[in-house]
Length: 119
Image (cartoon, rainbow, N blue to C red):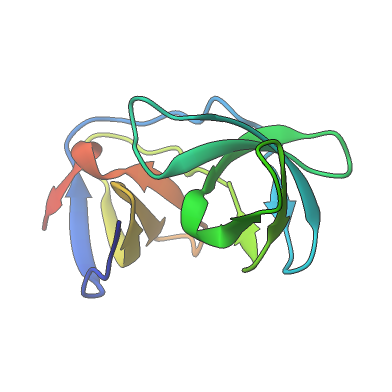
């Protein structure tokens, strides 16, 4: 479910390290191969892009043509942001229990909502 978080400062209380150093990205109209749904974070689907990269994408950004094929309906990057405890970030939006945040260096990426508190 999409929940619009008000932009604002948040603080990291549990560090996050990305497991995906080369994240997927896609544009509207891009063909995608669909995989399984994420059991830990509902609302996310495993996709493979035309360049052969696989990663997680919001179900809301993908229109399924069949059970294993789809097309991107919105621009997306799976870039995650590495964080440290105590770090202050700016939250720009929330999607399926993940937050799109920006650090003090202007770097943006996704972090799990459960690692963040209002700040």
